[in-house]
Length: 215
Image (tube, helix red, strand yellow):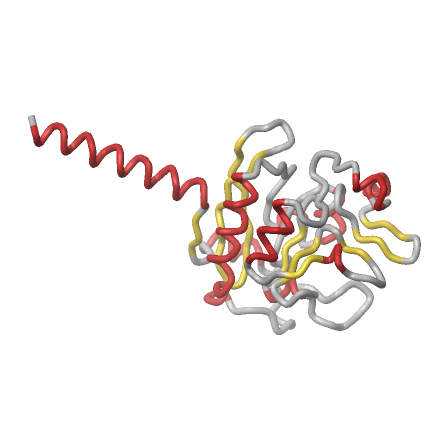
């Protein structure tokens, strides 16, 4: 009887442990199939982006816009992978909704396509638009969340264009679904780990953008 009871206790502990791991997400080296799909699309040999062994594929649970729990994927630098899993565990626990979380090579490595699809993404081996400077996304140290509800705004231009309804601070203050505002669980989760938010920038605003370097 004791063995049966002890086996039951162990089973409950293991189940709780597995549930906790699922809620937090997991990290693994980049699988062969994923790495092959990234070549010349979201990873380019002619740019000084991290090597395969310096990146991690994260499987991350999130709540979608219909309140369902989904499993998404992000690629980030290996040295920030634990922090990102903790950040998204906090975001998931808060019930903050995310519409999509797919790797950028599914969008041909095109940041514009990914943003237009309201896709939350991280690593993309690319330069900052209009410059020759390597993006923090190319280092696996930046994440964009719900780009439509949290657009990039500068000089009267809003990107993606569908984000025009969310680029005014007054509208953002109403906090529609998926919008990120100062002091909310998303900003708090990132700041707790030392990440900066583009919504704090002064000359422009990039409400979707979080970076390990603060820019």
